[in-house]
Length: 270
Image (cartoon, rainbow, N blue to C red; front, side, top):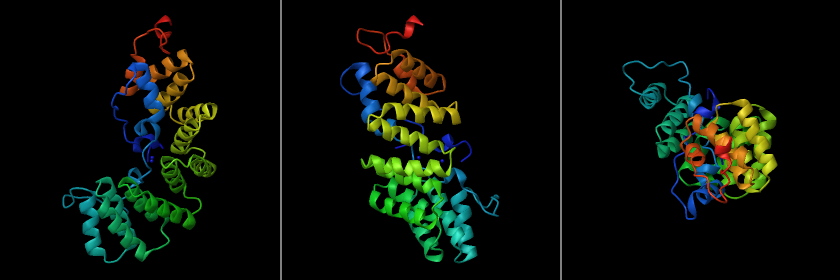
């Protein structure tokens, strides 16, 4: 499914171009829209963009967040917040095994830290351990029923495993707690599309665009739905907008040559 700080879209990984699939350019786009995980789901809310260095400030002794927190851990003894921060820093550095070790130590010191459970859940999730990830996201929710990011991440994990109704329920819960949660709308749109509930998917992409008018992925996603439902002009317009916003996939879709049966053949008539 679709994964948060600042403008929430900045925490999402940029979609990479996917490999061609058989069937020609139009079939390529349709196939990617329906089956390519990098098109389907946003990245996890890893809390990395919200990483705060507590009361510490970096100076010349610390070349990055990892070195800062490692030094703090050595000097501060067993403080849960330091090890939780170190786990987040390791996550940013993609040192996921170290994330698990640091956050597990933090949870030994403070077993009620919902954010720490979510951080460790992301590390499990990104290293192909979905059962452990789901357990940690659920533990986070059990300890803080208002923690939106845990619902979003658990929904992503459930959606990736094909449990779409449960995923939608988690995204519903996230939105009920935060009506501005862009990632919940974006991922719920993906789940609805997977269920072929296209009207609901379009409505959620509309909500993403209302929250962030420059969200290229939302235009690409909505354009893909228009494409597979035969709405040629709307698809072309959304692909062009995604392209204008810097989406290589949007440019590729908009550049499909007009041809018989091509859903974008009306593009050049406008």
